[in-house]
Length: 222
Image 1 (cartoon, rainbow, N blue to C red):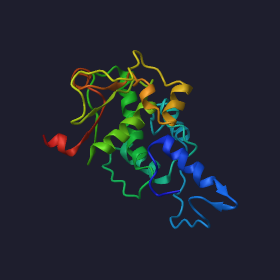
Image 2: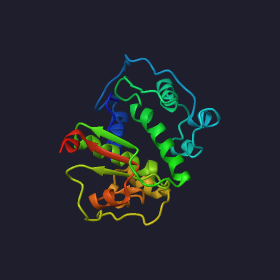
Image 3: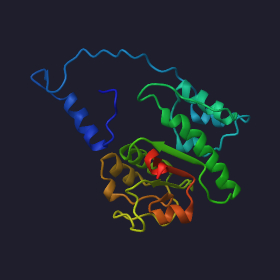
Image 4: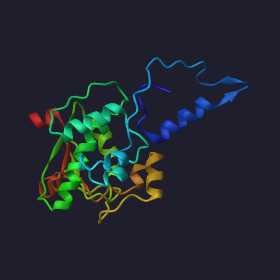
């Protein structure tokens, strides 16, 4: 459909519906044939398969947080390199799953800290060039980390000091329900409470000290 995915699930479904719709045999938006220049990424194992490797030492919950049938090979290699303690650079194209390449080892580490009863504190700072990208990642982390006990938060100039989110927040750590996930897919985020794991305000960030902090480079410079 496009090299760049549509972040709003409701808008994405509208585009897909109109792409499929035709009138008198004529497509309304696009006509074939469609040619894909980029080759498919080399396939790797599933997260469950990697969790089954004792030498990797991955947390077993990781396979339910990332229940993919298979990873890309470069995601697997990045995970293995980071778990081995090596500095890692992932250089690949748009839509190739760079986010998972670094989120997998980060969430794995945070889950181990959770089980060990470690003191709160930031273990990963995810830095983006603009607030829109920070917000996209925040929306992605909400259903991903809900119920895991792995805390996260956004620290940008739009982070409120103390005001609670309008949609409310969960008062306990639990995964989103099927209905809540459906609402998120439909782009109705304002109808879904934020997870217990999210440090929503600046006060939350200071007091709870989330494991994962999302920010931008200008905020760090300030």
